View (tube, rainbow, N blue to C red):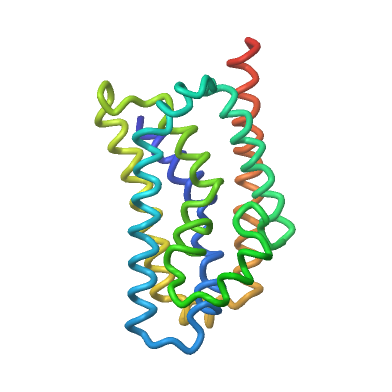
Length: 209
């Protein structure tokens, strides 16, 4: 179980990619006072945590009610994560997180905690797919310890994202935009390999080894 929890933490950390929040948070809070920045970071993490908790608790049941097998979602989730990995490797603006129209709308908003921070940047499609892939086979009623350990990994990544947003200005001064892009590309390579493994596992479970 410990190996699974560690692997989940690594995958979820790479998908959420807290490093990518640094330039985003700095640009969205440019000129704001420290109190407002602190409130936006806290609210975004709490909202993202609530969304992820709902998916962790009810995601598998929703798939079952829709007649979607976990293997099918594993294949789709792997493909979605692979697209995110490609965007990370090539340092492109992620269309899987937000569109140009959404970005334009965001520039007119005062409260950035719900959109785009909580969704789609923290609890985005990739993060939600990862939650469903990992929590789907784990029943909170039958394996409460395993479920709690996995969700502790979620909370750990959210805590890291909060710390990164709180220290965004200082961290960007240290690593700069180039450092953030290099980190994103390295994490993208890891995520790409894990995404391919998800697809392979889904195909094996669907059609046999």
